Length: 493
Image 1: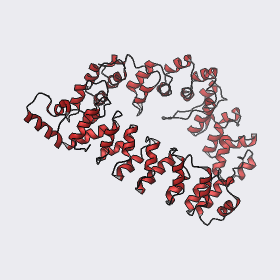
Image 2 (image 1 turned 120 degrees about the vertical axis):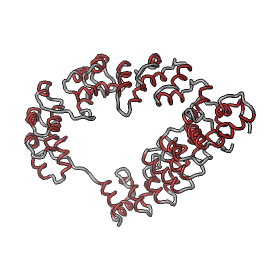
Image 3 (image 1 turned 90 degrees about the vertical axis):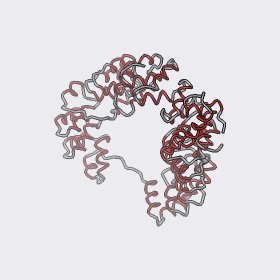
Image 4 (image 1 turned 60 degrees about the horizontal axis):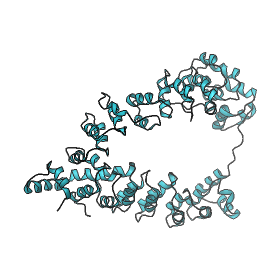
């Protein structure tokens, strides 16, 4: 067995100058180390630079469970994904079909997989996540022999109208029900509608009821409100209906706190009447009142409200003013922290408002400013270093997270800032190599995956004493060496 330029021998033995016996022993050790082979294969699976012939070889092996995990959740390179759909094990193909990042052409192959379990998962995913499959494929699925696939086909984007309408006459009641909705109902032939209305199956009758249901206007008077039997509609009326004066007076004194909550938020309830809720026993009613658009800052300050921890929706009236710079300035100066947080969600903010919010006393105002792509570089770096939320790493991808110059943090005691060093396009190979020896695992692994890593160190990390999976995923790994790793692992060409 020959290995060009002895890189695999170097992994095994640490040097290229060795006796033939030592080299042979080293290669035998490598060939027997199945755990190391698994790490290499898992790394090559995620390598976005792996050529097609490498991807095809990877997907001829029986992938172990932790490698299969990548198939379900990682964004696979397109060539890798296309090679994966030919894997001989239907369990692997089924896991692959669950991947939300799978290219549509690869999912289309799985939608016609010979294994029914794979087909079902693929078509269900296309239906659930609006993946547009080729039109001719959607027609084949909608007219095929499997009722479950015909049912999911009713929700596929791009299914021709005539095909969808024909499914309202399908032999399977679940398919008929799936084909009937408010769009299709008026387009069905009269005799098909009549048959659906007389259908013995409750699924179809329920679908007809939904398709033909017309929601009456919400009650706006006391008489209409008291006559409304649907509790949901009574609450909706309290929140949004253009209620008259008598009903507004009833709502603010209602015994049900959720109704008073609706009155506190309803812009059709006059502000003076709504302000009678300032001493309401329910904290959520007082908080809703404090967020109204038509109360003054003085009136807001007089309300005994508490802002619970966690995220809160942006008030609709604040969203309506996102295009008004003067309104944004006014809201950003509010004493109410939820209004200031809401302003950070505007698509565009004046520079003076950004500066003001970046210095806000409230931590979440500053954080939301970062999350919504407005924050200046300094604040982004500070939040990147200190915020403990699950998505802290995404802050590095904000438009103002300037990358040149981040190498200044290479020796910072905060490991996140040392990690940020790797985002600097001017960071040299020597610095990347140094960070592969960092005390923090996350920094080491990102450095090991960095294509600027010097080749000798990359080869060294392929050994089990290094980071073999991460090194095998490094896009700078030469294709020739990828093939050598697969050769040693016993994967056939």
